[in-house]
Length: 565
Image (cartoon, rainbow, N blue to C red; front, side):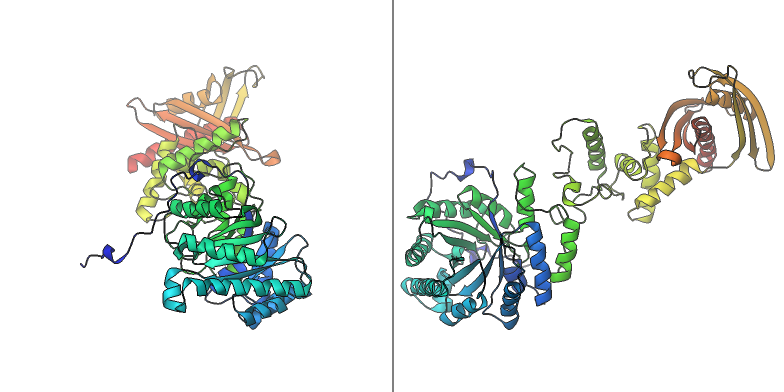
């Protein structure tokens, strides 16, 4: 097999900034968010969104809480232009939302862009031209000064058209496209020239958007570039520093987070990281990362299931099942040890008075983002007794005692190993019922009457009890009357005497299931024979005494099943 030749590639240059401060910073507030779903995300789709689909996506983004939304590239196509006009003419833009439109630094495209904005109360004109070394040399064949002049002329025209429109609600954003591929000092030089041309000041700030159009370095180097840029910009108060990170190396979120620590004020990104090649920054991930650290992201992702539905319909793109926070499987554990820890963590939380979320393997409460607890634990061949117990309790209200969990866990494990698939909660519950509850052979309890000698059955567990039972084994029916300290003791005494099967009830547990008129009792028992053989059973009845006796009968019947195995 041929070896890959790493010598074909060169290491990305580091930044000379030995006294960097960003590693000691923390993200304590939300940035200014700008959604680019309708522009950068849309242009990466195999089938771009229609005007109506873009309207639906726009409404979704507004509902999430975005105050700045890049809605398109109006000079690029009739659909893009028409969408911007539709938003304006049909008054679809809330008063507190600013639309953003992209244009290259070319005169006819800038003029067409301003035509699309006629009548808009607020808008950001986003001008860009590529400044990278490779594009200057290979694509444009222009030197540094010539490329800088493109940015200056474009900025001057935007300023001229803004003043001619009389619309003070139009703001200006400039991007040195491929910032990560541009010499750092040259990127600063171009941005400085743009600010001077615009006349930027504290009251007339320019948005300087620094994109990793292609992600080329580790996130710490990108953060170094942002801190160096902020530190060396001559009038920092006249600029809003924005970042637009791509995911070519898989670290767009980390790059944006570290960039904020390095001084960035604003972040552009898309839902689920939609965008060209490996995508843009995923705003959902970054915002919920902040949320899990106790920081208000000022975006509402409390109903991800609805968001996913609209996103799929509008973009025709899937959401990966392992996508952070939103994927179908990200709140799910299959591993037995993980399931056991989650089960214990959820129980501890229910019993705790501390509101801080602390559950193993779950960095966020699934309910906070619109998911139920149903899928937290799913059962396959990797699962264990804790996971099975969690499913039985959360889905059906069966609180399996610890001494029963290993036995039922092995029953479930045998099924999944044999069938090689995941079991649904309903299948697990039915398996429990078949294995421990609905056992009527070889012994069938046909009738059972309980009487207390002192007519006070609620006094304590030691009340002398007489039990009369009718049973059937095969075709033979038989019955007995026995006494004991409680119904179970009386029944076991009489059954042992009549059947000749010697055992003791070595473990017992009970609880209620259901609510109101539908409330029933479930009892669990473990019986042990003189030779140490153990068997488990469960019984359900509206009467707890009968539920307990049914549980004993199930455990006895399982002895027969075990013997046949």
